[in-house]
Amino acid sequence: WQEEVAGRLERQGDQRIFPSRYARDIWDAAMPGLAPARVYYPMIKSGPMIGSSGAPATPTYTAGFFSVLSRDKGFDSLPGAITRLHEVGHRIDRLVLAGQLADPVLYRSVVDGLSAIGVDVDYRGGMPNPNVVELMAECDVVLFLTTSSIESLGRVMVEAGARGVPVVAADFGAARDLVNADYRIPIDYFDPA
Figure 1 (cartoon, rainbow, N blue to C red):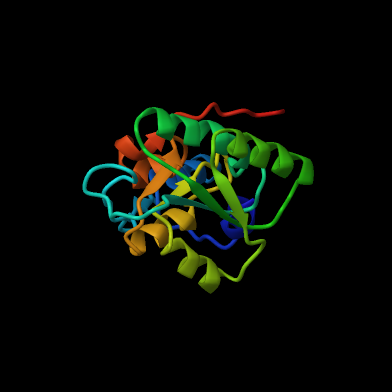
Figure 2: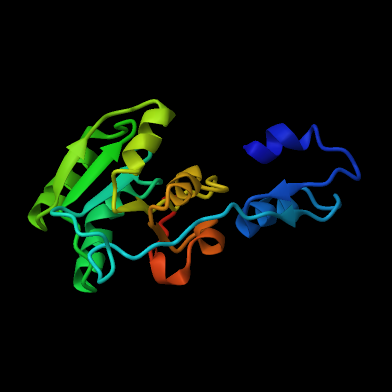
């Protein structure tokens, strides 16, 4: 929908700047014939992966998920993603959630799945962005698992990176541009249409 709204404001010769190749490619397909777009990447720092040698010693390894708790934001992928991290030696004991609860049945299912693999869940509800950013800094890793085709950047990745918190992301969309391949998890993209 961004292309429809902003596209009417674009003039011949305008320079378009995007935060990822993914976002640029969507706009280029929607608006052929306009000036070529440029991509400028936000800086994302990478630190040691959680639960690995060199990681800070903490009694509990905490992951964060900061988004609407919905399927298109990858909320339903959390148990599987954390299981994959456990399988390759990365410990997550606690998951902090901050975001709008979109589907109570989905929420209960995901929390039950996390509990079954030994992850405690701390749901903080919807929070103002400055509070979310503070909460990110308390995490050992932030999980960004969206498969939404309208997610052109994923501000969560940039905000976590700015605080030096590693991001583990779905191998989809802008995460392919912003997150090192070692920190991306293959996710099955499901389009119910």
